[in-house]
Length: 292
Image 1 (cartoon, helix red, strand yellow):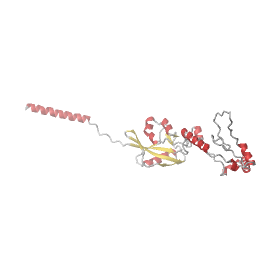
Image 2 (cartoon, rainbow, N blue to C red):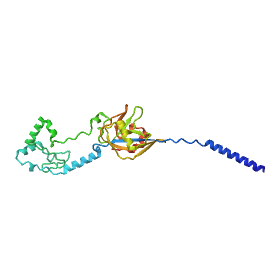
Image 3 (cartoon, helix red, strand yellow):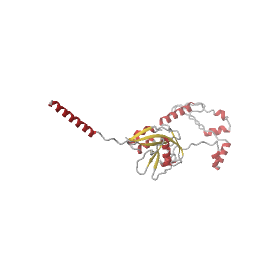
Image 4 (cartoon, helix red, strand yellow):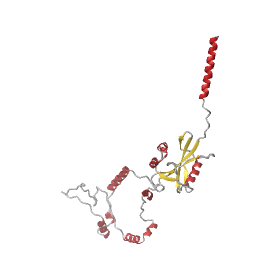
């Protein structure tokens, strides 16, 4: 009887101690924290001109062109310039005859292969004499250079691929790196370079609307752009209570005009973004940028 009473006392004491210990270790009810949701806008300017041709492709195209010109038919001068005429004499003055094969002569570039007054080992270059009308037009053009502006038959000269913004390295201009995709990066007074980011207020709005309102608030109303989709393409968890959603957009026209004092901005390529953005942040969103 005495033993059973002792056991009950020990059991009750142990249970009370365990309950007290569990109560002491039990954490207080955690306060419910509202997550901070923000939107990051990936605003890009698409390439305006074609990408630069790689060196290997340039060599391949050059080889094919030279091969085609070497195998092409010989220019039939006897058809366009009748023998014994003044036009044939002018043609002969502009085009020199190739070196003919002579026995006992050493030719460093190989034995000449002449046919119809052409060395078939190389491509044929032809210079044609100008007519009287062409000479008169040339003199008129020199006297009136403004006449060429409205002349549809004038020679088309392509613009340079290198713009003034490239020469000056003006990273705030949309006229730089025309063959690459540029992305907008901003920097506030106190802070690092980042993509435009806008936090949700107390009244929740759709993410694409938040992107539009936020961009106009910092860049002015002169930007004409469109969102690729209304749904985010990526999410970045900076902290357990912070979530950054990403939406892609393309600028069509206009310019970014800072509306916030001290706000700096740049239009950068993918590689240039990797140099200014924080390393961990860039590695997480690197796949969102275009290599072209």
